[in-house]
Image (tube, rainbow, N blue to C red; front, side, top):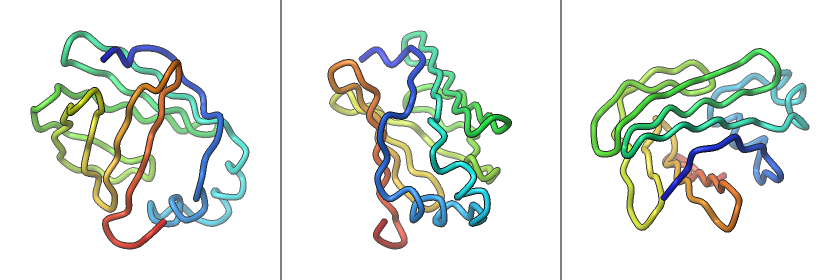
Length: 120
């Protein structure tokens, strides 16, 4: 599955709950509420560079190879180790408080998060 491209948020559900799960302060949640997240993906086979641009100054880039442990960072700045898996054309990663699944549906990048600590 080809994920390469530049993607922009069109819709988001449970924004406040998700941001609070990440530990983002209320004032920043409010400030960024209507900002359209930009995701830039480059892909060379199983090697990825995944950059997300939040608001105007926060940029987080994670580089990974499918099936290999790597260092990653959340938008809140938390660093951790993870292994990104590819199953059925979907990328899946366990972040510290949630499971992140990404897939291409039609011509859209669809990202889903499932909290491992509470429902969001």
